[in-house]
Length: 402
Picture 1 (cartoon, rainbow, N blue to C red):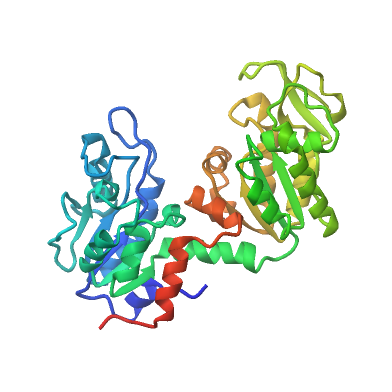
Picture 2 (picture 1 turned 90 degrees about the vertical axis):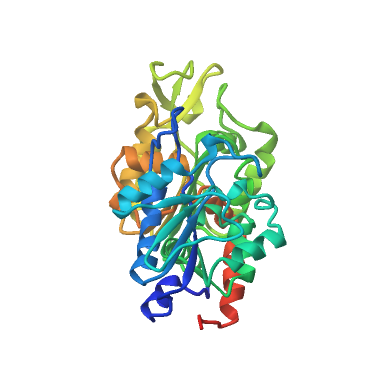
């Protein structure tokens, strides 16, 4: 993917004295008192901001937070807690600016945080008038927010159309490189793990991957639907019987390519969905009418682990069982540890996947951990993300700062 990279502009000395507008993803979870409960996205944004400061730029940073109503400021929608945490991480005061669309005062070597961009009327609909105003604020626009790359909004797409220069920050560039390595130029065998509660939410992903991967591992409620398609009993487990036909089509597409969707041969069941429910390991053929399948069994987990350790590339989205409950975490733990031990290049994304990675302490053993949820899924579907498309278009113009 041919894009202009902010790091290259900095290395060439083309950023000093320029006004740089960085679209970060600072949408972090908060408790009822507004305190940040997990700051991974803020920490991930720091390298780009520091790069701009070190290069002598006048730096403006913005992000969305939550789901505010455009034009209606409420204290709970404010980036104030983010500004405070960003100040701590950068070791300098990061002032928060409100009502910034018509102008921002910031000097070279300074950084300001611009209030929640989704408060601006026209942001989500990518209003051209707003986008032109945003573009007028800067000499260089930097998109460093992969988590919003699948949305064509004023701060993710429109501004990139009209800014003098539009480029990718280091976080976005790293995502592009990892995705290219995993999907466009993978080392084989390419194994994808797609798990979740419903086939319907990931059907297009499964269909797209069925044309690309050597092994497609399914888990959670998705696996239950595939078990139905394979003629296995699933008791009262979560599944989508009306999508059995689509699951059979995926199985057929994989078989036609000499590829495989491994169907569980054993499972872990319970009679009720509860952390303290007694767990029973049984063959997949022996699931009873009142059973809930809450995990893959140890035999299946061991077989999948062996396949993962022999993989060349691994794409992981979703835990294979209810790993939050100790009695039903063995499958996900075994998969996680196998990915960590595999020599394959691995890329993982999705909130539950990141929670599993953190739980089993394998962050450093994953080749690349994606910061995007919806954006990561759309890439797996084979879609071209709007943010990638406009950056490629602007790179083709071949412009550099004057």
